[in-house]
Amino acid sequence: MKKLYISASLLVALSLQAQNKDTKTADKLFDQLEYVDAAKAYLKLVEQGKTDGYVYKQLADSYFELFNTKEAKTWYAKAVEFDQNSETHYRYAQMLKAEGNLEEYNKQMKIFAQKEPNDSRAKNFLANPTHVKQIQSQKHLFNVKKSDVSSEHADFAPVLTDNNEVYFTSARNTAKKTNKMNKEAYLDIYKATRNTDGSLTQATEVSEVNTKWHDGPVSITKDGNTMYYASESFNESEFQKDKAKHLKFGQIYLYKATKGEGNKWGNATLLSINSKEYSMRNPAISADGKTLYFSSDMPGGKGGEDIWKVSVNGDTFGTPENLTKINTEGNESFPYLTEDNTLYFSSNGKTGLGGYDIYSFDAKTGETKNVGEPVNTSKDDFSFAYNQNLKVAYFSSNREGNDDIFVADPVCGVEALVVVKDAETGKLLADAQVVVVNNKGVSVGTQTTDYNGQTSFGLPCEQNHNLTASRSGYETNNISLDKHQGGTQNAEVLLQPIKVIITDKEIILQPIFFEYNKSNITAQGAEELDKLVAVLNQNPNMAIQINAHTDSRGTDSFNMKLSSRRAKATQQYLVSKGINKERVASQGKGETEPKVACSDCSEEQHAQNRRSEFLIVKK
View (cartoon, rainbow, N blue to C red):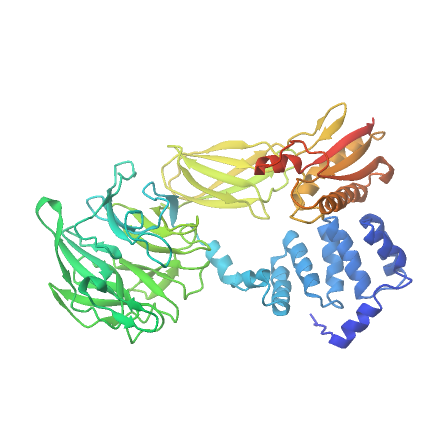
């Protein structure tokens, strides 16, 4: 496709000739929010051959405001050949996406990103849409849930031993001194016991190794008798001074402790490989106890922090070796080696879903693989430790705003493909929320259906599950997923549309939602208003009054203008669907008629006041 580049001088010329005597009528209609008639007026200019980029854009914008995605897409395609305004490309991209044309959507978003590199929408897109889509399409390897050991403070780096002890690092000891970096308490090492149902006992502090400084994370040998852990060089009175700033800078050192009498940890010793010049942290000992993995910023690495390994022979250590096959110019950390020598680690230097992602490295094949969703998210996901004997993994994530501990259960191989449809029309329903719970009532996960009404879940084999699908404007429906031995399991959920309620005074729909400070009809709003169109078609003598209300936030003048635009947009949508304009009056009420009178309104009360009403003025 030929690309048209317009110079700055030509853009000025276009803007100068934008509104003229030919477009005066259409422009007036557009400015008055009369989008149906404005579109007709602009179309008339197209038929007369009086077109330019301005006319195409105004025509496309008219359909955009009405959420007529097909027509908007058609005219934006012409508009962008003339109008190089970045927002035009962005709107065109949104219409393409709404129509399911993701390839063209990507092209338009790339143009938008080139024009607006500092726009947050552009930055999010440039996170690389291809690799994100690829990772998200991977089969889920684990099911994830938050561990009951997590607290309101930072909890991370959990490791599960073969005797069902979970060691982790936490800032929950608020009695300790607060560190200046994040205003949390200094880190301590904690331990909990894993019960047969997977729950954890209340965590207790491993006081015999904790100090007044940061302590943890840890690694436990296969026999459970040796602990490698990190702590600060201040324990050894080793640090560097910055006299100008009156500061002392320490390093992170690695220590070893052994389990002694009373099952207590003792004989803590400093590893000989530590240095005053750099830090060593996040230890991971191999199953045979002969190799210690750790992360460090020591010289000879690729980036800020790399993963290294060193041979272990009792208290003797070899020369650290950089794992060049997995390290990048970014940061790699939190190694963990399984019994079959799969190395899990975290990185923010590779192309993941965002922040730190968790990867696996197979030393035999040399393959590094992103573990994928739901383990990885757009947030930081790290410190993944998989106990192959007990078939369960623990890891950490700040996906909920805090460093928390999560449990990851491996998926046997069942992929449940779920399709959600309208029970009456068979229409595929996008943006439906699907929740799956196991036979113990524990949530396996929540997903949202894509443009084809589909989503998928990785589920354990030989377990019954219940699936619940819900969507605005529809009744919630539940179905059962029977035990499955592996492979693909197809499930279809039919949702009954919620019927319109007609009283003597009004027509009651589901809430009509608008985007913040906007008045264009959204996809959800269009679906609800289509129900109103059906009612009006079934009652040809009926006339209605549209009253749009806002909540009390914002000035009186702002709210009145906003509600008027929304009422007008709603009226215009109905007219675009063939309803005579004389049957539909519209009025913005602003905040003058609250449903709930309140001075210090809650979010729920604001939501009740922010509504659209459809009053029957003639039957």
